[in-house]
Length: 264
Image (cartoon, rainbow, N blue to C red; front, side, top):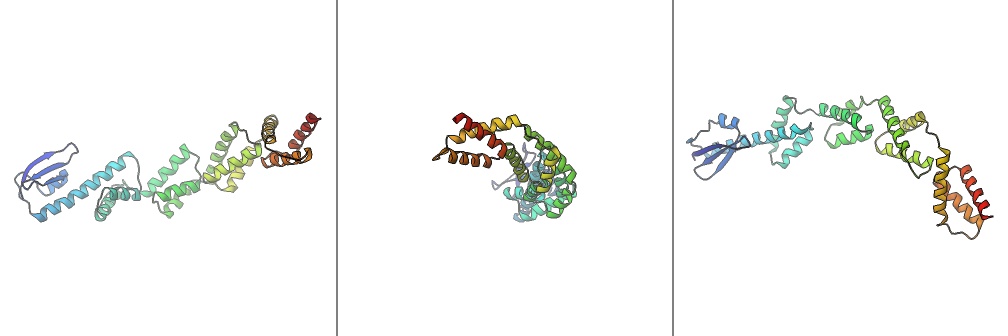
């Protein structure tokens, strides 16, 4: 088979038109390596070698493009190239090349991910561990990187984020607000011990006037749903309902005494 025409494509690759209507797309490196010129004759074996070399170059270019947007882990590169139907052998060679050029480094990726997380979010170490693990980062690398996420740094993040959450208006009791905040940071990947330590450090206090207003609203809402045979049963049910919502017993009793006055 003979090369009839060679033209450069917008992608940077070169298209070879053979006299048997076959077309090949190759990189400049492959063009030079195989000395591909117009009029050159190629055997079936040579064409197969060109295809294999071109597939490696294509895979490498795809990997470089994928890396151009942001850092990637080795697993991400492998998964991406598999979707591009690059062979396992070529993927191995591509990853080796990228590592040699310091373009692929799971340790560097994990460190960068941790720095970004600490700067832009309030993720705890357990969530960061999970995120890195899903990216294919090894446990040993994760463990090494998380050493930089010290308890002191975690406490700083916890106190800052907790204070912000407490400033938000809420219709829930003070106790329920604290429980909600604690649960939120457990879900973010912090330990119970550090969460409690941070909560004690910021020492949130009850705004008694706001707490009373919230209790009254909750009580008025609950009263419409309570069914009771007499006033005593009604008050006991209401008392239980408000206590379950996290209100203090003395505040609940104060409200119940007010209800008795109103009833009289």
